[in-house]
Amino acid sequence: ANGSDIGVFPHGDNARELELLVEHGLTPAAALRAATSVAADVLGDVGRGRIRAGARADVVAVGGDPTVDVGALRRVMLVVAGGVIQALSG
Image (cartoon, rainbow, N blue to C red; front, top):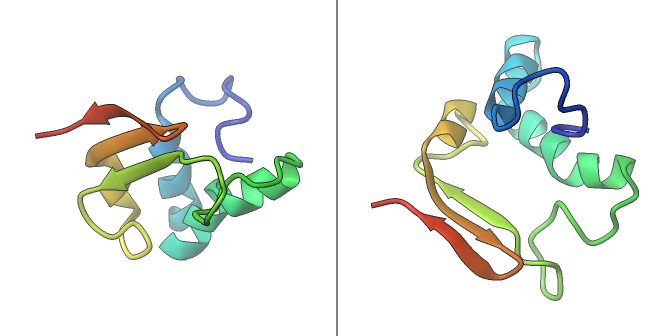
């Protein structure tokens, strides 16, 4: 599960994990699912990793479409955790 083994990369460089998944054959959309809904499922974290009504509001908005270009994950525009804005760019 993406980000669950901090010893591999410095904390905060999760975007690199997705870039490596794409470099090794996953589509950007598949890499994004691996880091979100699939990771939550693997860890047994029901209700996380998906955007839907009633779920915890943890969202990152980026500049671009990460399902096409995972490099967009390096252009963070907004971070919402638990329904509260944590960071806002610009």
